Image (cartoon, rainbow, N blue to C red; front, top):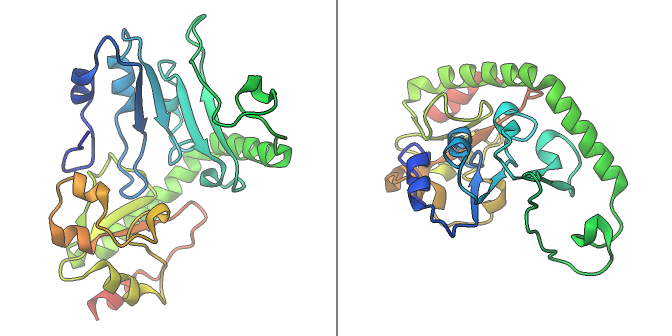
Length: 254
């Protein structure tokens, strides 16, 4: 389903597509290129009386946006350890039982009987324990971390404002630690080359860094060709040190 120009999918559009036979609705909570956050709370409310299972891909938001993911209408939540500063190579699928009704999951790999027959093989206990610790720290410190990311964001947006960037995603409906922007007159490659001695940026998500095709995310948003070709993704975390913003702006102006 195509999003609007701000990258959001309207709840009404999703619910209009629901049929009595619909079994599953799957939504990416926040986009990994733009940081745009989808209205899963509204979707969960709209699906309150529908039997379809609701899955949320929370790779970008687990341990960061807490309350939306606590909605009991969400049946399945998937997340990755390294996104909350845990180890790489470990992920989770949270499955909620709806009364006596269980989500009809089937294994992708067959063998032993671990995890109720859903996933064979020896479990990586150190990775699981580390992921659990990272999740607890994320829950405990998420407000403090969010405040630091928002402060960094505000400084960043104020610094680049004179360059008149096009920000892809509506402020207030995006993650505090991600900005996707185009600078008029610059391609993404030019921006990355100019900033390479100051800050590391990308022209898309890490998952598609080897692709030279136009971003399917920005294309779906209906952005113009120049905006898509010039789009650069900036991201940071609560541990990112403050930058020499003057140097960043001067590099681009040069």
